[in-house]
Length: 365
Image (cartoon, rainbow, N blue to C red; front, top):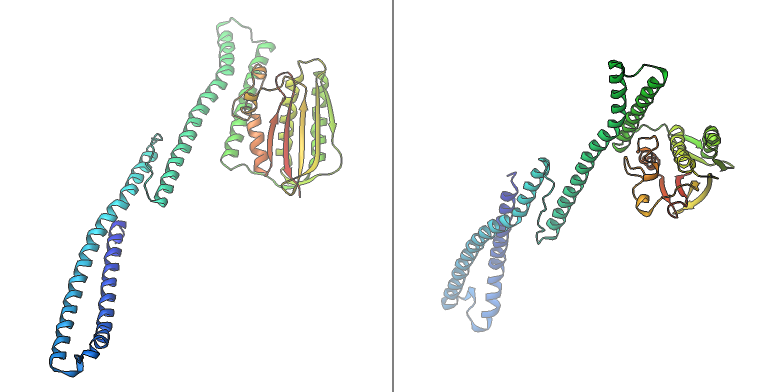
């Protein structure tokens, strides 16, 4: 009884039986009355005996036989139609079952045909959408492995080269070369830390210590922390932060995001004469709710339209930034952290050489 085909068959059979029995009952109840009304003027009613009684017996017997034949024919037809409709209904379900087994086996290239039934067609669309999403996820996984291997290859090659040179006596283990090895080790450690954070964020396992935070004060502290680096690079940092902006947030994580945005702006402007970065935060309304909008605007190398769509991708670095330190997933982590707070992080640029603006929005309490 657990198989759907059996249940469908029994349902059709039960409907036919119930319909036949109800029809037989109604006919047996209505025929005598209708017979009396039709034969009243002819003097052949059931209660008058003689020819009238005989005629009623003939009619009653004929009706009973017709009902028996009709019920049997209806049941047989229900059996045939039940088997046929069950087979036709379950055929696309079997195809989808086969498709899900292929998905479980790792074959995401399938495409389930859309049946004529609306509900089954929607289910087929969902299975196809699932296959597409799994294919995209698998492609991203393969690409991530390749990108991680690529990012690790350079520091490991440098470390291996120096160590082998020292073992062979080609290099002297002086402070300069050991410092280079230490730099590459820190780069690897930073990469592993970033990957760990990215993994927790994308899996929804990032622990946020939410509390009421003054975003304006947090941004001011971040700006003060970066001022020495801006002064060393001869880049002017303008900060337009006033008042209080209270939000429920993880202060450390949002501080990490702001630091990432300032660090990116510094790298984009440090090679330009007269480099400037404008940091500002203010209250605004979006969709009927109060939000804090933080902007980091620089007059640095800028971004192309294609780069704007890619800078939040894992390990993507604009051509102008590929010779700088960094794992290439800082903005990916920053955007995911902001989204975990119910906000958004976007980028805009007039074009190459015209600077860029990164905008962070967070809901306020």
